[in-house]
Image 1 (cartoon, rainbow, N blue to C red):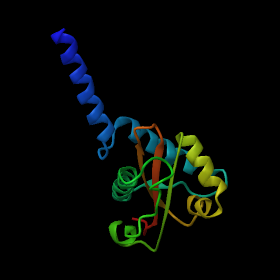
Image 2: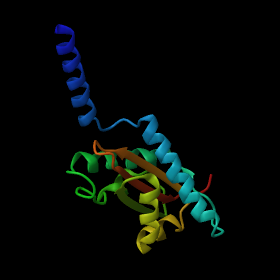
Image 3: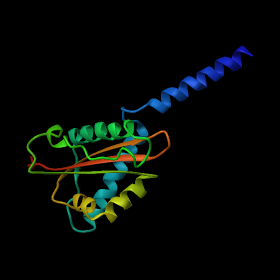
Image 4: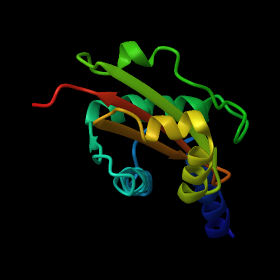
Length: 155
């Protein structure tokens, strides 16, 4: 009986930790970020545009904002909002920046929704050379995304 009670307490504690977890990029979110970069670059290259390179600093800003949206929401799409301060948070030296945010049931569904939106598609296909992606999955399984785009001088 004591074993069962300990097991139930351990499961309850694990569930509480998992349901409140937000913040650190997990292997699953890192994989989803790479998937978004791949989908973006496929859209760009099939239209004759140069692929974007990943900028880690843009990605860190995107990750923090995605986690903020998830923390402040009651589920997708409540809490979905643009980061009003991102222009000050991304690395300096840019000539142009853009941001997409979204949430949905999967990486593919969110990407499709962004491509159907004129303003989001304009960022994906815009005059940018770098991107940072932040992905979080909430406790309901919804995929949340921030895409930060930047046009930086080539080095």
